[in-house]
Length: 391
Ligand code: FEO
Image 1 (spheres, protein in one colour):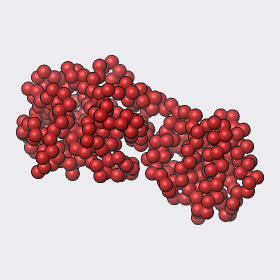
Image 2 (cartoon, rainbow, N blue to C red):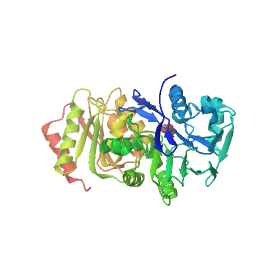
Image 3 (cartoon, rainbow, N blue to C red):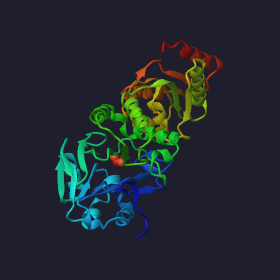
């Protein structure tokens, strides 16, 4: 056992989660600043725990709960989301608090939890259901596909706290729990990266959830990851409004891999051509930057150019993995084109273009294909084509 302590975030309301300082990969999402699994304890006539933590942090969670109350006294466990970063310790907590009801959505939360943890003391809820803890009420708002079918947020009207689980969170390990205690630019960048890598495919569902939450007075957004919003609630809500609408800015992202620098030279020329149009452009050698950072930049940039040389009649595997990842995130409102060099065949460029189309991008320039090393004349011609685009 350790000596982890709960952090009081309101009168008799505690953060009892865990900080994962070392995590650098969250199912493929590169998390350079770690993360946290936030769980909250409300002491009232009834005692409620909102969410748990990853299984390997169960002891920390139990220690933090135990620092304010005996875990057996918990009456209600709200499971906002079945994904194991929030539900992993559920069975251990349920064993310590055998009389606690486990609140989950019906039917998706119930099915998911039963499948993972067996038959526990579940109480399935639907939109509008609420429970009284005594002085406080918990109201349940399912947010399906934000980002799993079972997802749900919980609102406490007396405290004006929204327990938002994955929504509005970010993968950030920090010793300070509130937004205004941390660097705002860093939090907003990590929140954008989180949205881009986890929630991008679900913009419509995010807008539906924002509408459902629109009438609520919110004093705290107690997220499932990263900081608790109390000072910059308007900023994160405005960001979610913009991100869920798929707003993009006049900015270009150039992503490539290269074998012998020919495709790299094309990428450099394309980046500089956008700059000549006064469109800021960012140049990503895919070997140097994690996919999760590249898609964060693409997410709000209108233009995308993707390049690959041809290897064994295919595109480079790095670019194939990137395009597979991008396609799954279902980006919207992007204008794109493919480029690359080749020794003979040159099949990669058409394959890249096909994948860009499949990812939902509008193709605005015919494939740029250059055999071997590009000449100065060919590079000038590429620049002229980009300058001539009717954007
Ligand atoms: Fe933070 Fe979808 O789990």
